[in-house]
Length: 317
Image 1 (spheres, rainbow, N blue to C red):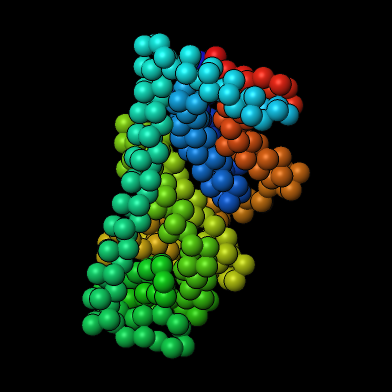
Image 2: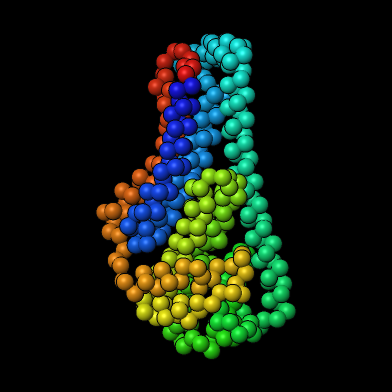
């Protein structure tokens, strides 16, 4: 029971204070890949800790020792004794219900989000096949439209879409920056990162952490793509291209667009010329983020690890 309480408290503290602390971190925009890892680790840690808290009630014993037959018999007897009481049976039922609900909701939310995004992309591609034409030199679909817009439709055979107004407004360097931005989205499979984050938000809508994580991961994937474009065309050119494509009225929901809600903040970041974080900071921060995810597993397994090699069963209490 103590392990379950520790894991529950861990999930509650991370879920409440984690988003508040992470959103106020000054380094997020300087290291967007690391920031994405941090948000993912935070979400996984909360879900994992809550799930394991329930499982430690369902399986409150672990067997170790040299005489396997004797230990299995002893553990079966101890498990029967633990589950025979009304209190024990209630704890097991509650733990199983909590863990199963969390896992099922998480899987359903992510699967539903992925399926919805795929349906939207297929519908939009069907329309594009009728009204757009492919430009082999650009490797993109060109759509006649008055709004200057560029976006990509990820997934199998991902497509980059440019409007005729965007092509008219962008010179060669800015066009190269936009194409590099969209190719970075496709190459990095950013749509999966966004869909998983939105899926957890869909699964647990009452928990603010997942709504904030979905918003931040969506924004940070744009910064990763901006950085890829900077390597191709330079900061000023990318910033100029973003301002040119600030109109995103026709961008479909399932697409990743060069322009968007955070264009102003992204342009200020590019013009500010902030330097990337040094490896001396990135490495320990990455280890900390990964540790945040693995901590619940370590806490749940601690009693069993402590009993390893000893000739008895340990009941987690």
